[in-house]
Amino acid sequence: EGFVIINRTGLLNNWRSSFNPQDPVQASQFHSDGRTLYCLELAKYFNRDTADALNEEVGNSLSQLRYITSTLFQTEVPYIEFLDRVHVSEVKLRAKGLWEVPHPWLNLLIPKSKINDFADKVFGNILTDTSNGPILIYPVNKSKWDNRTSAVIPERRYFLLGGFPYLCSALIHRH
Image (cartoon, rainbow, N blue to C red; front, side, top):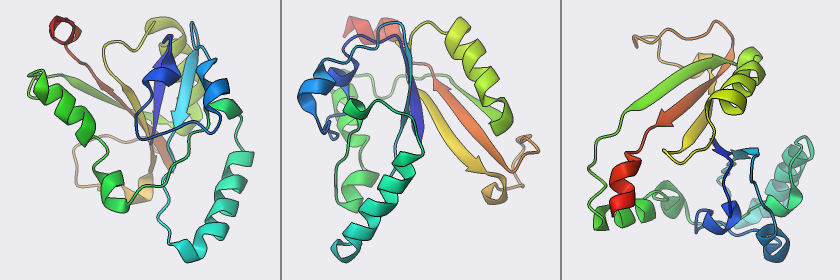
């Protein structure tokens, strides 16, 4: 799973509370003003006996990516806590009476070969910030897709699902 953050000040100070930067001082100096950041979450199930092999596998995966090293967040949480990671946000929104607020959600299926064009046009020109809600990106393997759905999916083996849940920012700012 991944997400996109556009033009946010104090980005790392508002990061999910369950994630901590490996270098908090350097991370706190990072500013995203005017920039589009692509964030990738990698989750691996493991047990203590295989931790060294897992660390090597994650290191190999990270070595193939270009990223800002001070923004690398790494944490170990129990499996159930990982599955329930949205609950903290739910509690906060419920306390403000905002959990049940309806919000439209746009899902777009983007062929892997077109993601750069999509990102340039949408994240570079159309959207100027992400204050109306998160932008979620999910990689999808076509072989795992349920063909019994009514969605028309790209012909490519891999594609991305871009999720744009729109939050009613006027309501949120009132609370």
